[in-house]
Length: 264
Picture 1 (spheres, rainbow, N blue to C red):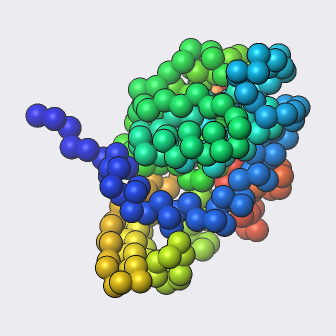
Picture 2 (spheres, rainbow, N blue to C red):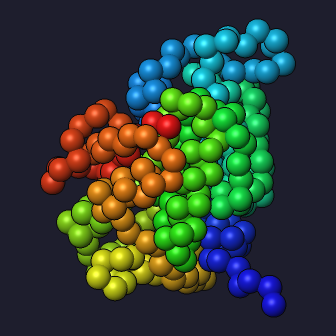
């Protein structure tokens, strides 16, 4: 019997919710995030990466964007001189990333793959997993497989930057629901805790201007900073530092997000 598809493998889900998840505000944040990535890994920012130019700097970092979505970060990294491989399960996202890259005049290496299976041994100087693109799997073992695959894909001394909502922030900012306007929709949300804060059940209802409604519920695993650090150290990384943003600010009660910076 074939394995039941996970919710995050559904192209229709991402097509329906993409205007809300990746609205203009999210795209506007991408340049600062890309610069933060370069700052963390100590890479030099140069001109846009275009393989066809035939004059690629040997200093250009080779970066894996694990779960690249429509390419908002991948394109910004390439604009700063990185050679970027974007991996995602969702083909329409990869098509959108290609369109964005072509529009900005940069090249991306894009591959449709499951991060639970994707490995390019020691191919990358750095890898990123951003905007809470981690924790979708049903089991911790699957999450650890993703971490192990990323570690195996990094060169010795390579960097991995993982940014997501940590359990501490989820507890601090928890609300049972809200509504707002975004991406041309009225959005109504409902949230509930799974287990002992092991995950967050999220229901998102989108209503368009004609009153048509889209309704989807999913569960995403929550990790504390210490838990995730332990998993990363057990998955092939030699060190992990924890921050509250891309500017090295502390992960404390004022943290905006959770950023883990690991070295292989």
